Image (cartoon, rainbow, N blue to C red):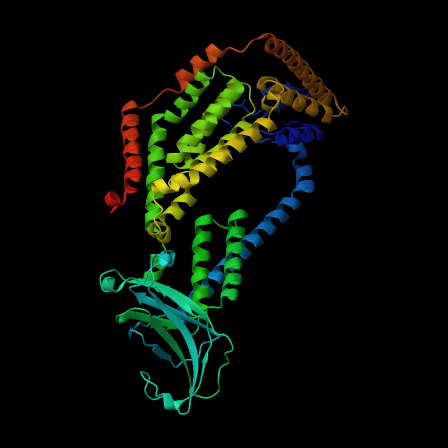
Length: 570
């Protein structure tokens, strides 16, 4: 609102601070006796295209605005400018520091040694470097069994570490004479590795396992005649070929946990406070993580970094989200929600139950996040028709969307990551097994969640608006006009005219409010009319595409179940 009086700016600020959801139907233009006018700019009603309205002041109080308000915005802008420069400087410093560390440290190359463990005899592998921090990291490869199959085999490989002090410095690394040994001490626990049977050695693919030995009662000797020996012994009746690699300078696990926690906290700070875009935040933190590994002499190579990317999981998520997007183009989500409104005759709890059940079923086989987003607009429209508060309804739908997505390996991104994990796959957890194990828990959670929601909203009036939406909007509009009139003073004739005009406008709106309240109280719900309008507004938009995408989804789900069969899956 603009005027020739200084106090009018207060009412303009109040109008400008009013939420944009306030429904003001018309603009008012009030003419003052001296030829000037007051123009009250309004915001469009809900449901229409919103426009940004600038409230302009006339020349008479531009100088006052400069005197009273110009210094604070400048200071604020200056402060924001400094914060922006500081943020950019810190991020650039982190990036340069990571780059310097990565350039200074070379890629850690793992040297692989081939050994053969004879039957009924200890095989010792000599390490001349003394382990740091009393820890030794060893990786073995060969005809080994994964740990989760250890109870299926009676054959095993026993590995432990010894500290050996020699009389003279070691010359031949492959063999030590017993006469040259001065002192031997076992400094680690025994690592038992399950093995395949003798007839499968050389037939099964190589399996690698790693283990970190914590060396107890071990001190670094100051002289060069001490070594570390890795002893290996099997209960096989034949020789066992193995590949062996080691690291005498592994990262301290305790320090690694601290580094990981700090990096994770930094990532969440960057994302939550929107310091930078979340994609750039993820790139920066991943670079920082690799730099920390490099600083601890464990810089990975490019092939190892690429192997950390779970391509199968990414492709599965991409494919399922693409399928959901294609489904949304057909209008099936809106149509099924309207169908639920029709089947329940617009009754509150049957409608909420239908929407929650529909969302849970769709989330089982489609991405639950995207499904929830696509179901939200039609749910809000149904809540408007049935005079329900959309907030508790949407919360209930989101809860059941997460519950439904948890039952299948493809319903939720964390499930996709878990089900695609190589160790989980090798342990025999397939699509059907996952559903069978999760089904019971999901069913119990669904029952208790539903009972909790029914108890929480046991009074149906808690789900309804206390007053119709039109009445609430009229009350907000009346409050705006009354507040604007109250802010006007009576120091001049112009201001008095403006104040009286605002009061007349408020009186007209109060009369309109009383009329709408009486109409609403006497008017019954028009279920048939609402249903007809919804069916016209939300039909199936593309039936051929719906048939194609539906057949595709059925084909994908059938393949998931068929993959559970070992004969077909292999």
